[in-house]
Image (tube, rainbow, N blue to C red; front, side):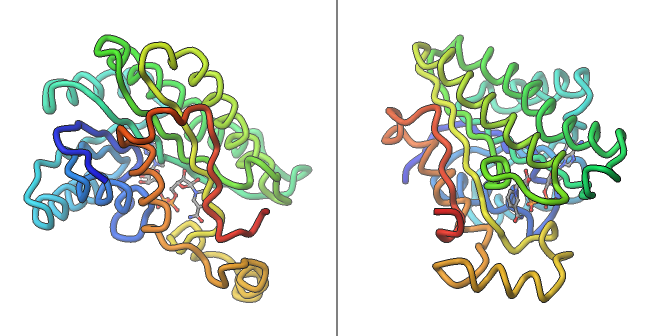
Length: 250
Ligand SMILES: NC(=O)c1ccc[n+]([C@@H]2O[C@H](COP(=O)([O-])OP(=O)(O)OC[C@H]3O[C@@H](n4cnc5c(N)ncnc54)[C@H](O)[C@@H]3O)[C@@H](O)[C@H]2O)c1
């Protein structure tokens, strides 16, 4: 997969070593892209950029922005244009969970999850699309979740946000296709990251038994398909949701 000369931004790559964002940023850099990394944690974003520079000898730029605050997102995109001169690829990976059963779920937990997972995606995608429309080409990938397709007990806020992200993806694909911009979503199943570390061991084992491939996903399992969707060869794929779940929900 060749992304030489492409300028990429991965939003939500500030978790450090085990997050999907770091693996996605590494995957894009492995294919030759110059990568800007944005996260909520300055130290982690800087570490991810250093890891890319040291591993691939390519430029990588760390940024900090809270995706729920419009002014910070605007400043982020201005800084990215200054640093890398434009944008060919944007991956929206920021996401949080605040699980609870519906009848116990607080309004605050609902708002927090919808703000990061859906409103943040809207704010970032709107600015990415503006830049890409000018150059009449671009690739946008949203990281949703299989829970946004099938729903989940105890995750009404998360599933609704990820379902909303799928609808945003499809609507954007329809609006932007004629401008040479593709917009797709990757829906991971259960992947070994800090987000799934908290699963009770018994539940984890039950899930593993239900996954045809026989194991939870690794961050690299997600990074590969994301990178492919960003290549020239994937230029006729848009508005799609690709589940990467080891066959769990087939
Ligand atoms: N791990 C899984 O099993 C799994 C499964 C399906 C989908 N996903 C999705 O994949 C994505 C990455 O998940 P992960 O497991 O690597 O989680 P993670 O917590 O490691 O990564 C989430 C990222 O979002 C960033 N973020 C959170 N709030 C933010 C804010 N307000 N502003 C800016 N950045 C913010 C964090 O800094 C972090 O880099 C998420 O969107 C998640 O919903 C994960």
